Image (tube, rainbow, N blue to C red; front, side):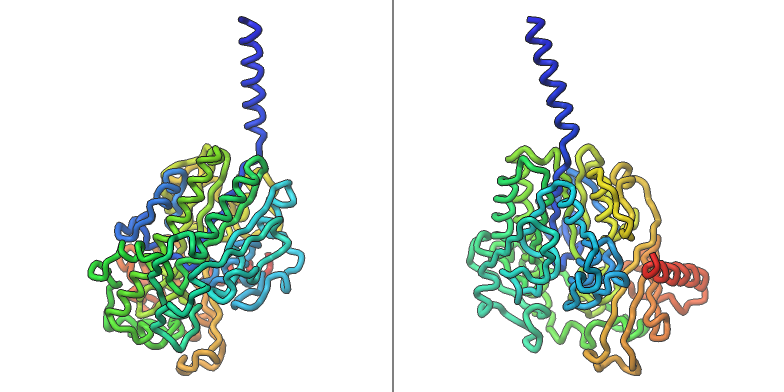
Length: 475
């Protein structure tokens, strides 16, 4: 009997020792063009039961910000850990390997340390929907395996309604409620292929990146998701007729408010966006189910992020490429084994912080080039509020926007979110500046930058902004 007990205790010790030495897996989930208008971020209208489920496993970052409100620059920044002034990627065409050929990307770091690295769907930039089913602007050095599903949303584009037909589908207010099942859509296929890789590599340490295309326009999803959001229940953002009276024209993305859409059309587009969000959420649920089924959840770090936020009519603007809160702020959830669960943090963080965070969580050395800061302290103690400034920028080519009155040069916008404030400069203030206090003006209706009562806070934030952009180039 004693021998049996000794053997049992020995085997238990060996099991514990092996478990403690096993490298944590990484499930790295991205959603394209997703804002925080979701139940998981306290919007009761937009249903996200699976992201709610993920939140129960980890930490919700209520003040997370992108470095650039456009797909390619944001993704290049996140994946290299470098700000856009370092990557030199500030449009949809520049490839970061052309500017930084030897940079060590986040998945490369894990690949070099014995991890299987796989990518399904959009992680680096793709032109959507044009490049669905291809490698897009992907980085071959980052992955062992790359999978590029294609579904009815791409194959049957003739069924899509486009309310801005002068614009290609990738930048149009366009949608389609299909009669197809989830599995016939690209994102449904992404979930299926990702589940296969989880099965195949369940015994290996893995870094599996799963990039969903929705809710990026065209907003295509099965009709059952549209039915979740009846048009008569859709609430459009509050508007004020004098909203733009105190804002610089450089802050605009489109000159015509709402791209000329009627109230009915705006509700239909909003319904479609919400439908695409809930459809994407359902695919996230399939990944969580597979982790549970394979017994991998307890040893897997799960990160959910979007490349930038998304405007749905705030200030009359839609989509991205502005520096307002709704486009700069991003959803970010991180669930790490044995760290905080179902907690929220008000600490300001940036997407470039994901790279060093995952490296530290996995016990890997953070490369010296990385400009972000690890979030491990917050994951351990989410109740901490670390007032770290968060920076977002954008460059606008005025040749493509002839309506920028009295501006004869490209427009560089730089913005800092700090505590309750957002301060933005356009061409170092020569083409205007903005200051908003979110404690009493969450909709950014009142630009305080010229109010003498706020001169000191303007000066403080201006110094933060100037110092950061000097560092972003020299670090």
